[in-house]
Length: 151
Image (cartoon, rainbow, N blue to C red; front, side):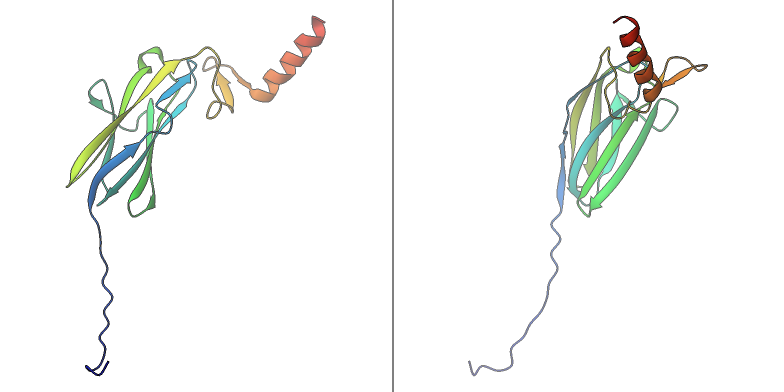
């Protein structure tokens, strides 16, 4: 175009935004004495601080709960709360909270009691007491034996 040498510059743009949370399964049922995973998908930049809350108490890793975070990209994080060997008092509403310098967001997951265990994560083993356990394959063999016995 006759004006002179062209100039070129690459510029990186980072868009910062407050957390947005989605919950794939807002209601989850599980039987007593089994585990259940509660999941939140979080989108935010900069990456947020994540927490799980029940009855106004911030939860932490212990014998009842296991919390994990998995960053899938700069702005995407999945957080999972595993409720371990569910007791009656652990049923109810759980809150997944995400906060960064631009704001915060919160979503809820309701954990309710069922009679039959839900798989996954309860497929591996049924725990009836600390002294005895029944594996899924042993339970299947028992069911087949009972079927032929009462036939």
